[in-house]
Length: 484
Image 1 (spheres, rainbow, N blue to C red):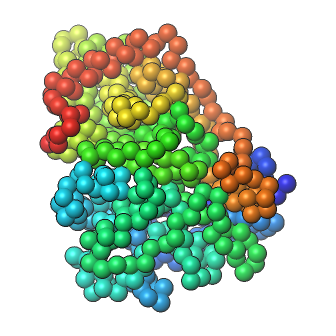
Image 2 (image 1 turned 180 degrees about the horizontal axis):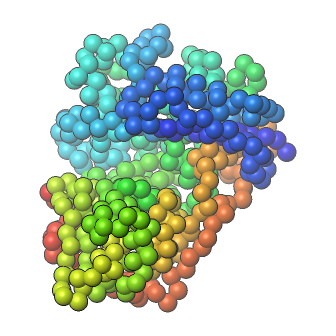
């Protein structure tokens, strides 16, 4: 038996879990908010260290033998030749690089060229687009950039005492836009295309590798990005998909190979185990529920909307809501608006509109699931994450609409747990007690399991009604060409 810790530095806080190496049982925890606004788009990384120190106070790390680090993704930490910050770190929620992302797409010859090169098409959040923005907007700063790290890379480097060797892992590297999950290698030419010159990039470690040992003797594992750490903490494996319900939505699944998608709907991440995590994003999820609740004058928001929706029947009396309120990424309809279809005298009732909002959100996410299924990704069960997963209407409708078993895990700090599990793996491998190809078998997340049962045919009919409306309003939306 041993003790390891997982550290998750998200956009707003640091959470530490200390776990038993054999079972994954949580022994103690630490928490601290970042001393910056959660919506900040750039920050001095020292704020992450201050938060880490506060979260680790009171003996939280006493007896710990190894630490894993998870951190917010898509941040950019630019360093000069001496390893000092060139400017504050740019965070993943910074949208200023949208035009730069479009420039990069054109600069390499289009979306398909990028998909083939690195498995994703540049987005504003990615490090490669931020480098381009830096070169165009702050050329003097850009000239001083000699090395590039992401938040998790920088934290590991700091914990190790800023050694000459800088590291990352497959998961974090796969989100940069200049490392290919398919080939397992960097594309330095894309860094030069974005920044205007080469920059040193961190060494990419394997899932069970060790980044180093602190002066105090603590082993530090490779670490990874927050998405990969959460998937590892949940214990998802081949055949599993994870649907996240936020204002926007995302669907990711474990797969044995990287998937290149010239349409740009799939982002080909690597996971924290040596497998792959293809991800499909939607621009609209819970925002469609909130908007509908406001339109109906429901002060109780999505919770009251859920109660109302369950008074309707499957198919919402023919009412269909295409929830493209902020445009849409899947399908690629950036300039679209939402559509309410099927209005008849009998369907014009509040409960039917409420039901149509839930069915529209879930059908849109099923479209995202189908993008993966159409590429050979097996989906036997769906893990449903986010506060909206607790809504009765979501739980009642999701298994039938998704057409598969739905697992609703209890709320936990899964990214921190995934980081701790990685630390236990690296520690075991370093001692010769664990196989570098097989992570420790920690117990899975406590969860409620929902079966579609006899409702599969009902869910299929709802999906068909939704798809017919989508294809009528946006013909060819899921075709090979670009739809605007």
